[in-house]
Length: 209
Length: 209
Image (cartoon, rainbow over the protein chains, first blue to last red):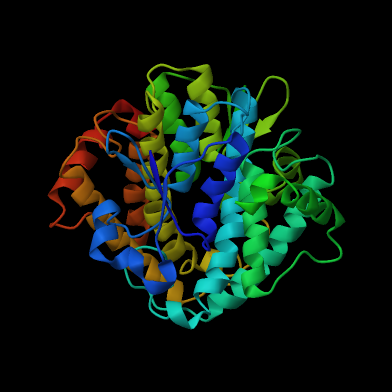
């Protein structure tokens, strides 16, 4: 297998942390998103959607979705389980992974991509052009604040985002919180449970991935 | 188990079609979203996020995410498989389910919720107020058109969205295409493969669910 990555980007970091938790190391190719390498001919041949991460399997098939890649790795490297341990638990992990992605990760991305000059005509990921919409900067920031409160309330009652066990829901939430730093938002003082949790997950060796 | 539904809404239809494909029937409670029943005290006690669908398990636990509910049903009622049959296939199904949701379903929702008077201050689902942003109507419509082209290209080369087998990716895509009717967009003439596929999946008995 081969992993296409961009060391500074939050999306592929989701897979890197996931792999680090499972002790998986793979030959890795860096794609420099800041230089637009994803739009070059070489990478377009790998992924016409021009996004990372990409996991290339030994038979040549390519998986191009962060969560889809994690599912593949979960099934081929089951230990430790990061996507739940029984049907109801797996459903809860999916639910909170998606919640963290929609209300956290994508909220930050909304504010970031609509305010950063480099994304003037590319306010959404992928190959299609969409111009920035200034009103989304404020909305993205408001949603990110609401996300901090949501997760603080959730973590007041449980150790990890999906319950008793560290999971992909924690990975997405941690990366969303760190990504919020890119729009200069940090965990507010009135979110002590989120802060306690963030310190704990950030202290795991995988967080450096 | 008990299913909280709203017969006219596209989100719970995702689960209804999924259940119909598996031959699952459940006691169902209708929640009238058009009358705002989801914000009433009774339903808030079921799901504080005020969204449907909700699957209540026999032990009282509640699953509140469409895809999470489908995963639970897939594992407890494996036949026929609707989420893939091996690790790489399951990863592809996840990838295209997410693609259909993000580029199709959420694109339509963006145009619909930002233009419909009833959603003036509730342009995003859930309990938080977000005012409509007029520029998102145009963007949502443009994204929906791009989605038609994306899926037409994909279906030019395979029978179903994720490959050879009907899956949850077809369900999300079909519901996104039907939902596009709410913003008066239909499959364009230059998308014959998408049309062929849409006629086929719509003719399945499950499509009426």
